[in-house]
Length: 148
Image: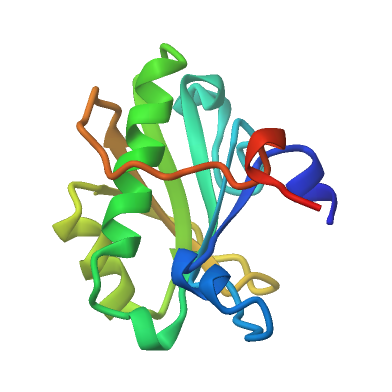
């Protein structure tokens, strides 16, 4: 997958699945984090280079409510801060009020909604970056963690 190779898409696995290598289990969550502002949404007035952008945040249904999404957003916020950027931004579905309220509860401010007929997304949110204490995630792609 190109986004994984670019190291901008991250998959969160349930480490317990490695106790039973015969058991196949899909990732429990995913997030993409990069500096690519969607030009249909973020304008020059927004200073698109002043942020990292969250894409493809998803948590598997059995893990819903576990705090994984919150932890991933906090990690992304801390990553933006570590990169010296003042903002963490995202866009989400224009009609999904429940999702929009989730982002508000997580400290995001609604910037505006861009209504493009060919896009379901368009509700734009941003949150100040911060040096947060976040949940530790182990990188299982590191050579010393991969065994033959």
